[in-house]
Amino acid sequence: MHVRNADVDLLGVVLGAALQGVTANGRGVHAARRTNQQLLFSRRAARCAALADRVAAALPPGTDAEQATAATRMALADFQQHAQPASWPEVCARAVLLDGLLCDAIAKLQLGDDVRSLLGADQGPDARSVLAGALDADPSSRGSVSLYGRRLLGELLSQVQRVAAANPGLASLLTGKPEGEDVESVTQMMAELATAHAHRMAELGL
Image 1 (cartoon, rainbow, N blue to C red):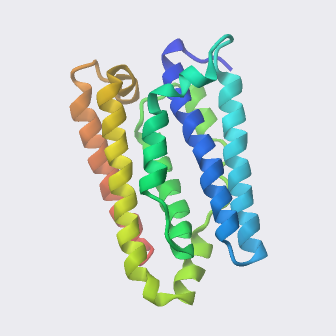
Image 2 (cartoon, rainbow, N blue to C red):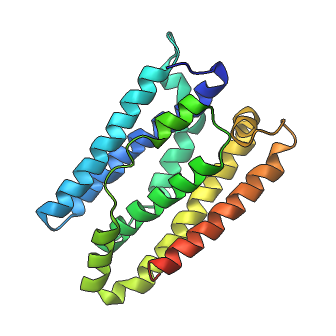
């Protein structure tokens, strides 16, 4: 796979996020109440691990993976800390909503064909049916899950702004705009992600 040097920072972001996904879905396995739920989250964790392996293999020879992930390590860690789900329905909501946000972001970002193919491969098992079951089993949780979904988006957009401000070259790469013109594009993209997220929340009854 040929990866442009300009994509290395982006691959570092994806690598860090994929590794965080392994951890988050591992917590889903722990929180699950039934074997089929544990299997779903274990498959999701395996998907994230496989993505991390593909991304690491795609880094140019001699690239330090630790250095490649440095730009967003703290932002990802803070997101994980501040967006921790507090219940089983919130665990399921996190999985569904982050899947949707990831798909929306991939569709909007200015990515090379190889990188887009890498990110788009194997979306993995959908947690919507598990979320629906969790909400049906505990209807009173809908209010807290709805609030959590909004907090999840707020935390994510906050960290995106943080990374974009600290790494203008990466923001320019993602938006396809020259440095200095990319801020408005990042703001617009975040607004579009928020709108899509709100629609998804409504579809889920949240």
